Amino acid sequence: MAGQFCGIDFGTSNSTVGLSNAEAAWLIPLEGAHRTLPSAVFWESDGGAPLFGRAAIAAYVGHDDGRLMRGLKSTLGSSLIHEKTRVGARAVSFKDIVGSFFGHLKARLQAETEGEITQVVLGRPVHFVDGDADGDRAAQDVLEAIARAQGFHDVAFQYEPIAAALHYEAGIAAEELVLIVDIGGGTSDFSIVRVSPERARKADRQEDVLANDGIRVGGTDFDRLLSLDAVMPLLGFGASTGGGKGLMPRHYFLDLATWHRINMLYSGATLADLKALRHEADRPELIDRLIHVVTRREGHSVAMAVEAAKITLSEAEAARLVLSAFTNGPNPVARREQFEAAIAVPIGRIRATVADLLAQAGLRAGDIGSVFMTGGSSSLPVLHQAIRAILPGVPVRTGDLLGSVGTGLALDARRKFGG
Image 1 (cartoon, rainbow, N blue to C red):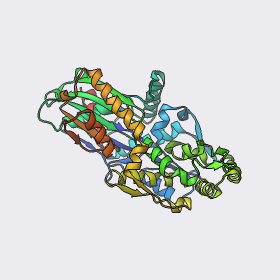
Image 2: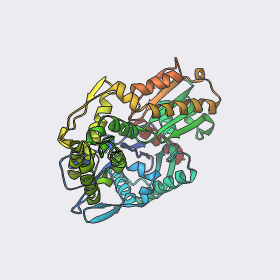
Image 3: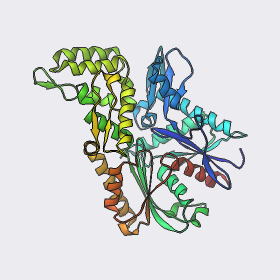
Image 4: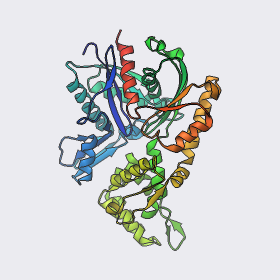
């Protein structure tokens, strides 16, 4: 539609669709009044139409027969995007699953506008894949092909932290250097950008971007590490076998703790392996719990309980993991100190990346006017502590944690397609 411009933030955990016109930018409702949509797809085994977002999660929690898939963005940077997964009697490619999700976003966009919008700016992490330029390019190409297949004829990309900077810039009164810290579900992205009300009117902002970097670390990694530390030992992770001569294989637990790999466990071969391992385990009752989770396909329920505990730990010193209904085991308590110890390695990588970013820009900590933190996992206290340790005394601001990128992409679409 003439005069309206679209940006889409396809996130690992949540997605948004932004619109802009000559005066403003906003997010459109995607599910009822909700302007964020969980990046989840539920395919029914009987061949029915897929469900998306909260409806997909509700169908899974309600034990409808089918497959729930989350963390789909993570498949873009892996060989999984070209593979198929079984849904009932059908084999569905991950590319088609992502395509169906994009088709749903396009339909919601169409419902909010009077005419069809065929131009879009898509958000992307600084690196889909760490240290692999060819893999990174291939991931973007796949995402572009998916968008084009859903009716977007003109497709442009913008780095997610730059989009967040454009949203931040809309609310400031004077020029400053801002460090954008975008901690998403699958990646952490960082930019140092010179922003001001005057610069916001420029068509070309390349010279205002002083540095840009990112790593494949995000909220789902924090979920996985919390799960491995607090939950998987209750299901046999690290348990001994053969009278202390061996340990349970790790890969079952790594898959169960990783959103986009959970469905890999739901096979007859895996169940047969686990039942055989139960006879070798020194604590077979733990393996019984794992078998219970796999048999009843409760892996995503366990993952959602872990995610809920992580969110609680952003505000509280302890969180109870409500697991008994899914595992036939206890409901343990996770403590913030324990969680922060579990994620110390990725937090260290984030700190190192920010330090490298300053060096890349040729700046000292005191040159930064403010830090703008966004993304679903950016509220973790340990992240704020890490940023303040590198930039002491620099104000740390937060905005719409899930909406800044989508709004900024819509602003960028106006700049790119508005003539």
